[in-house]
Each structure stands twice: as C-alpha cells, then as structure tokens.
Image (cartoon, rainbow, N blue to C red; front, side, top):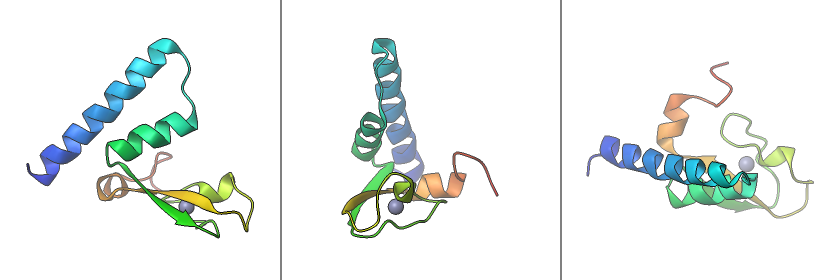
Length: 88
Ligand SMILES: [Zn+2]
C-alpha cells in the first residue's frame, strides 16, 4: 500500500469510529486518543515533563508538571496538513 492509500485508510478507520460513537452520543477525549492511536494518526509517547509543543500536542494543557504524561504526537500526515486550529 502506498503512503497515500495507507493515510486514507487510517482516516476512514478513524472517521468511522467517530461517526459510530457520535450516534451513541458519548465521546470523550480518551476515546478520540484511543481511536486515533489505533489508526496510526497519533503516536503516544510517555513523558515526565509535558512537551509544551502546541503545534503537535496538547499534553501540557491537561497535566501538571512532574506527572508522567502520555504525549500524543501527530503522525506525519497530520503534521503536513497543519494544526486543527489552522496555520499560524
Ligand atoms: Zn505532548
């Protein structure tokens, strides 16, 4: 499979999970992280200090410094596409 086809398959897998869960009306950030990780869209890394890298991750926004935190890094395709808030 080409990179482009693999990326498309990952996005479809992730979108399907979101749509199905949306019908149940109960979707949390943990669900989104799990499904995006399964699809290869996010790459979890264990860190002691949040990365504070707002472009690629928001772990610094929901942890206290000193705690071990899972940092969900955007995959290469999503980094190329820009942040969810758009280009800065
Ligand atoms: Zn992070």
